Length: 107
Image 1 (cartoon, rainbow, N blue to C red):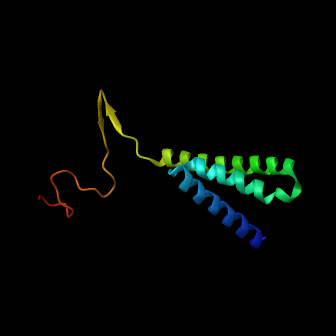
Image 2 (tube, helix red, strand yellow):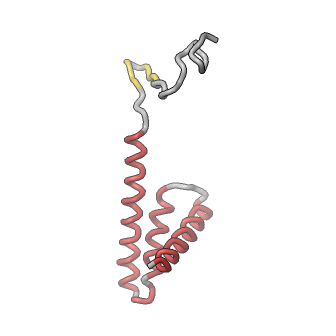
Image 3 (spheres, one colour):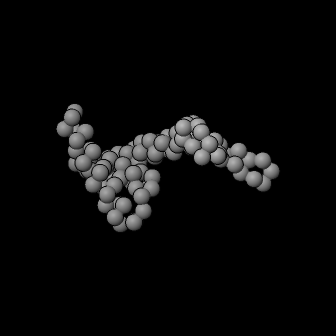
């Protein structure tokens, strides 16, 4: 089981790096395509039909993983405060109020 995971991880990383190099772009599509290519290559000994099925499955699994990561990032990002046409950023916890130094005293 560990050896199979190592082979899968090695192929996935190889395809991911190749796609980043070819596309000159780091985005979720690289991981999705790398998952599809990895699934297809690992099923190559079982015939072309299995290559297509495993490739599609690998791509779908990686699409769900990437989509979940994007969703979590968006949900955990702070929401800016909008009043009319003005957008205000809320201070992060631990930030000093304007006009005060890090110790809380006046600058």
